[in-house]
Amino acid sequence: KQEVTQIPAALSVPEGENLVLNCSFTDSAIYNLQWFRQDPGKGLTSLLLIQSSQREQTSGRLNASLDKSSGRSTLYIAASQPGDSATYLCAGNAGNNRKLIWGLGTSLAVNP
Amino acid sequence: DGGITQSPKYLFRKEGQNVTLSCEQNLNHDAMYWYRQDPGQGLRLIYYSQIVNDFQKGDIAEGYSVSREKKESFPLTVTSAQKNPTAFYLCASSMGTGGSYSNQPQHFGDGTRLSIL
Image 1: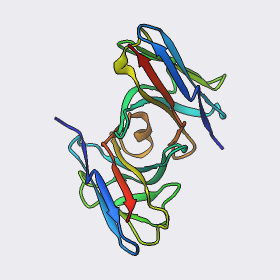
Image 2: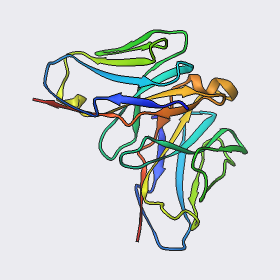
Image 3: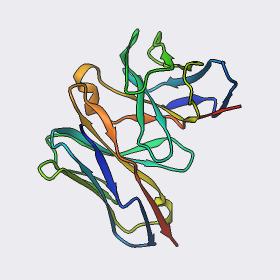
Image 4: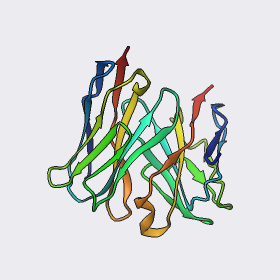
C-alpha cells in the first residue's frame, strides 16, 4: 500500500533562508508527484507537478525534484519570505486508477 | 476569472438531516473530486467523476452521495448515515479524462467546513 510521508511536520525559519521540504513514498511505482500549498482555513493551491518522465520542475523561487528510485521528492524554496508561511502538501499518483495519495504536510513559518 | 466555487463556507447539520455542499467550476475541466480533510490525517477521497453522468466511489464513500448532471457542477450530499460528518470538505477539478486525468494538476476550491449542531 502506497504511503506518503512528509518531514519535518513543522518548520520555523528566519526570512531569507533557503529551505528544503521532504516527501517520501513507500512504493517507487509512483506515476507523478504534486506539491500544493494550503493557507489556514483555505483550499489547496497547486504549486508544481512532476510527471513520471521528469526529474524536476521549477516555478519562480520554487524547485521540486523527484527521485523515483529512492522514493523521494523535495521542494526547495529559495530566499524564503513571510508570505511563504503555509502548510505544504505533497501527493503522488499511484495504483491502477492513479488516485492521489496524500502526505500530512509540513507547516512552514517564515519569521520576519 | 476561472476557478472553483464552493458554498457555503460554513454549514451546520442537525442530527438525522441530509445536507448538500455545492461545487461549481468554470475551468471547463472534465474531472471533479471531493475530499475530506481531518486534523492529523491526509486528504481522503470521497467521490470522483471523470465525465458528466458518471462518478466513482473513493476511499470513504459510505454516508455520502454525489451527482454529475452538468460538467460544471458536482454537488456532494452528506446523508444522515454519515455518523461523523464534522470535517473540512474540499472540491477539486482537473483537465483530462480516462487515464490521462492524473497527468494534470488538481485545482481546489476554498472548502466548506461542516459541523454538527
